[in-house]
Image (cartoon, rainbow, N blue to C red; front, side, top):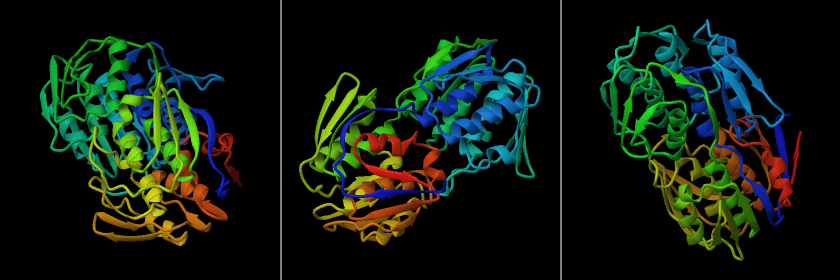
Length: 416
C-alpha cells in the first residue's frame, strides 16, 4: 500500500482522541536502555518509527514485549551488542538517541549516522561534542559513530545552537555520569520535559527541564518504571487545521492544551472558534480562512512541524500571507505539490508568499517528508475532486492511523 485517495469536500465533524507523541516516545524508548529491570511505556502510538526503534532495541539484546494495547515492556539488562546498524536505522533520525544511553550504561556504542526525512541538514556534531565533554572517546569511521567510556563524567556543556535530540541525548547520558552535568542553551520543548519526567521516575535527579539550563546529578544506577507518553501536539494541530480548512466542527480529547498556544493563536487569527476544556480542544469554523503569517522558531514559538499544514490552510485563505521557515532549509518541498492542486505559492529563499485561491482541485501528488505528507492529505480534504497522495510511508512514520481517524470525522479516504 503506497498511496491514499481522498475524496474532497466533506466537512469534518465529530470527536477523536489524540495519540501519544512520536517526538516524545522515541527518546523515551532510547532512555529505557539506562534503567535496570523492566520499563513499561504506555500510550504508545502505532507508528513505523516506533516499530523501527523496537527492532533496534531487540537486535541489541533487550527483552521486549508489545501487548494488545500497544504498551511496550522493555528490559535492557541482557544487551550484549550495543550497535545501531545502518540497515535498521537508515530511515529514522531518532536512531542517534541510542548513542548517549549506550555509552552511559554499557560503556560503548557503535551507531550509524542517521537517515530520515530530507528536510535539510540536522548534524549530529553537537551530540558528539557533548559526549566528548563528558569524557567519551569518539571516532566516526565508515559512516558509524564509535564511542566508548569507562564512565561518563559530569561537566558543563554549552550547546552551540538549540537542538532537541542533542539535548535529549546528553540529558539521558548525564543521568548515569559521575557528578553534576549542566546543559546550557538546552531545548525547552514539551517532549524534553516528558523525557525528564520518565527519567525522574526512574530515579534520576533533574532540575530545569523545560528551561534553557538543565542540571543533572548523576546516579550510579536507575530502575525501570512505568510512564505514559504525552499527547502528540503536532497530530492535534494537524487535525485542527484540517477542521479549519473544511469549515468543520471537531473535538479532540486527551490533549496538551498548554503546549499548543502558538498554533491555537494562529487558528484563532484564521477565523476559527476554539474552546478549551479539561484535556480537550474543540474547533468550529464557519468561514473561509483568513490569511495568517507564520514565522517558525524553537518552542514556545510557532513549531516548524506545523509549517506545511498552515501552508495548505493559507493556500485557500481569503488573501495573501507569508510563511518564513527559520529552522530547516529544505522544508518547502510540499509547495510544488500544492501548486499541482492549484495553489498560488512563490518561494523566495526561506519565505513562501501565498495568495489564497477560491478552492484547490484534486490531483496526484507525492509526499516528500513527514509533515509535507500531512499537508497534502489535509489539502485533499478541502479540495474539489479526488486527490491521490503517493509515497505515504512518510506519513506512517508520524501519524497513527491517519485515514481511520479522519474517516471517523466524516472524511472519505481509501488506502491502496
